[in-house]
Image (cartoon, rainbow, N blue to C red; front, side, top):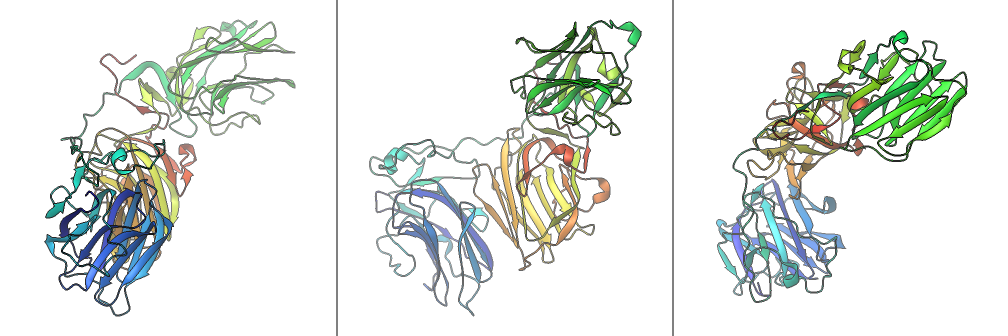
Length: 594
């Protein structure tokens, strides 16, 4: 824009329920971001910076209503803005926080109409020289910076095909041409253009003009479903609360003079029981467990108590081997090839029963201070007294399966799995969920709760390639929809989601996309929901789920789930149905089964 440019696009009306969202970055103190004026000159809306503060002006023909932020935003960094109109009330959100509110004058028309529609009338970054827009915006100074992803009433405005423009570069926002005084720092980064259709950046530069950069090509289909190899010798524990294997040992078949056990494991968790043997009277025990990511050994016989601890955090996608031995009353712990940790015993380790691997049955009470929760991960190559033990052919077994060959952190849902977060979960005025997902499918329920009659209800789902967050109150269903492309969310890559329900508004944000809003048809300030909250799907008897658009179970992986700020602990949930909580599989090469 060279300090005197503008771009003109179609100007939508703002009806009773309306919303505007965009992002920008600039160092100007006073400048016009955009304005739209109706044919009758009495209806308008605009957003400017004045004194570095965001100022939004509105009129439906009966006087000016204004919102001005308390903070300044001319720091050259990226800021996201959303304006939500609900009848007479208008709220302004800046970077996910409420920045201010206003109301149209009493008796004023609730519709800001008479706009010119597709023929133009919305000016971005400046105004034409022949126009007189005094009193329509807090500042008319031409904009110098970046403004992108301007969305009004859920539709992104095509800034690449304007009605008119002058001195505007549509494409990449290049810092060195725009923000001359802004030092380069790690906290200041280029935000890649999200492949939502179409998304462009209005760049105001000094000559010479910058070459336009074309957006990254969008995927034309979902990713091919991965081939999940399985280990021939590994056993996965932890998918149920008391996952374990009980090992039968014939005392006469082992060497009573020496004790030895070894096991190889892989886990993304920092805690869990690996091995435990005790007597029925619980007077003796030997336990090997993880706590704080480190391997611990606890031994007690007739009051002779010993505790050994390794020094390294072993959680992650690597394999580790633990060897515990007793030879001539010397207890030893060795992890991988590092030097052994040793302690002298008063009594020798005796072969006692029962012996458990990976966890404990529900009835067994463990000694104080020992990690009792089941191991969540993969165990293999278990040896007792030097003899290999097949854990899949144990005396008793609960909640185990074959391991995935290649894994990463996350929980895996097969397309028929689901978790019951709580049987009676309440949502009144506020609710928030954040999570990451990865899938190769265009549909799937991520989270849902509903009254048996379908109202009230709440749901987060992938539906026809879009991320939708919906609520149902007495007025009906209202939904916030991400503006991703049709196949952007089924690319089998990780995507971050934040969904918020607040009184009569739902919002959803996916990756670096901007906040998308949905507004209730009425002014209900509370959802009044109390029902089971499901993750990844729901049982057939729980139909209908009133806020979902479809009933497809989620297929893929979830991780880093927080509900109302509290991280989800899978084993603390009410129930798990075929959820693989220990790890998320990644594609295996041909012959990847080991």
